[in-house]
Length: 410
Image 1: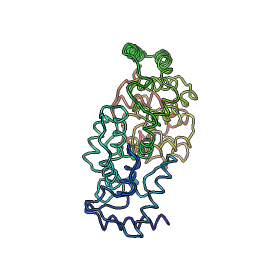
Image 2 (image 1 turned 45 degrees about the vertical axis):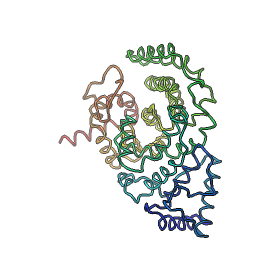
Image 3 (image 1 turned 90 degrees about the vertical axis):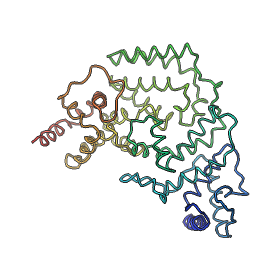
Image 4 (image 1 turned 90 degrees about the horizontal axis):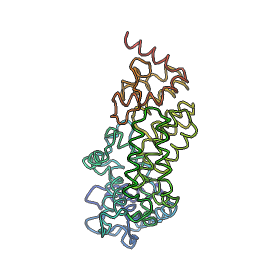
């Protein structure tokens, strides 16, 4: 059956028989929830629980439904489930996703209805169950705005709410496919990788020692100690079990944080190839990038002039963050010149106006990397410049930045 025909038939079916104004994306989300749940779905009643009054589809709609289920099962076997093409998030007006008829909001709503059909877990505190429902919450994010805002607050993200939504949309395919493999890799408290209390305290002391170091070379040595001590506890099977969501395994977070710190030190020391390999490894282990590797990696790409890699990173993480916006402006300047880059620089300055004074030496930089920062703050600007100034120098962009600043003053 032609996919377009299938979509049309199922869209007509759901809209005609549903009391909840559902559409094809909602049906797709519902079926995905049943397919990725903890029990094998009963396809003898594929719409069970979706409609208030059960109603058998007509012959054409039934054939379309069977065709869709068969396709989803094939994609699930390959670990390639994905949302329908129309479930995109607008870059210009992302807030529209919470409109009742928006396809992405419909998909999340349908997934939540399928989630309601999952059997009640025996132990809500079991690590595997917690991870399963955490992933499910990500997939239900766009069901309604209050839920999305609650999850944004719970995540403690430094991103604005709308940028958080953009990032979460990018992660939905990965979360959907991770649900398929959870039962193959149990992350229980008895699994490997749970450090002893004394060892955790030792790592914490080493983290504190690293934070006290002004010199990145000295700081690197402390991160190396943590990595050497923690790495043997997590073998390949453990990381495969996390399926790209390593940060969800709390026992692995100290190791991931130490590796991120090590990569930052290598970047500051000019060991670009080593830092690049470490950042990419972290992005493979944490596809949602909780350690924040994308930020310094974007500066590294800019420093190396690897614009194709930076462009791909900007597509993967479509967010209005200081690092990505300033490095995008630098890339456009290097590739296409001042005139084309001007609006990109304006957009970057809107994210953090403190960066130009730091880049131009008009504001003194701290001797030590800020350990914490808020979006748009001076600490964020200082850390960006400490990691990125070599890139701006290397592409002769500071002359452009100074000239622009002078024009604005005049």
